[in-house]
Amino acid sequence: MQNFLDINQIEQRQLRSILDDASRTKAARAGLPKGTMDVEQPLAGQMVALIFEKPSTRTRVSFDLGVRQMGGQTTVLSGSEMQLGHGETIADTARVLSRYVDLIMIRTFEEATLLEMAEYASVPVINGLTNRTHPCQIMADIMTYEEHRGPIRGKRVVWTGDGNNVCASFIHAASQFGFDFVFSGPATLDPEPTFVAEARAKGAQIEIVRDVAQAVRSADLLVTDTWISMHDSQTARERRHNQLRPYQVDDALMAMAKPDALFMHCLPAHRNEEVTSSVMDGPHSVVFDEAENRLHAQKAIMRWCLAQ
Ligand code: CP
Ligand code: NVA
Image (tube, rainbow, N blue to C red):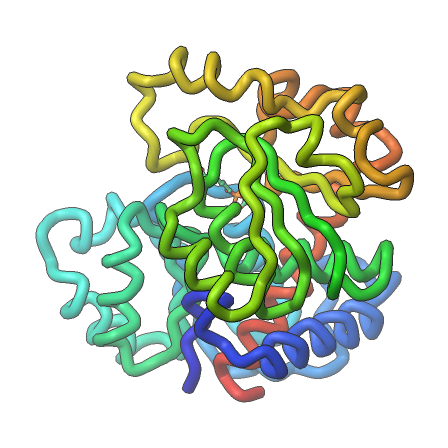
């Protein structure tokens, strides 16, 4: 039994084997209607709980569909409707769910909830986003980059905007997959120093460059995300927008990256805030391939967790 909690906690060769497996099963079902089962049914007879304390489109649909394609069944739970949201402890919830299901995927506000769930569950737990990280997203993003441009090792990935949970998982991935990572945003929204220090200690090249035009120079991949995440308070909305506006990805910024640079965004995007529609819908953008690859990457993550 293996949890999938964060990219920095899994051995490099395991991460690589998950992505290889994802590509293999993606290719194996090419052209099949979406609701068709996979040729192999590794989750036959298995039940998966998908718990959401926050909204979701991609994570919810891709995990649900992925389990079904592999022959398993799902129960989708909203945190507020569970007893968990009304006083039952996380530990007791974990113990109870472990009697009913074979795997738990959870999207939480607090990382502590995920960690406690993993501690007390006797079945594997997958991180479907917390306030601090979003590892499934970055597995899909690396898969997407490599499908379009080959190995990500040695490439320059530039993140503009808020140093948030998605950014943190990119920093984890930099040391594990061997790419250089540049953060460009206001100092008040820097990624957590512990993430940066740990990646550097593992040998990753992590730069912080305030001047966004300088940061994107020779970027192979330009990434951004919403300026206000689901765990952020809305009260500072205007101040954050003012701070982050210089880091918007528009055509002029995209043109400063390498000519064959890709643009990524985990979605949901706020068009014409962190990224213009012209970049989202332009020739560099692979945002919908990322969304599709959530399905394939997560199916491989679930098989890895269940050793299937
Ligand atoms: N990118 C992502 O996790 O999207 P959802 O919030 O729609 O799941
Ligand atoms: N940073 C965003 C990602 C959403 C998928 C959030 O946490 O809201």
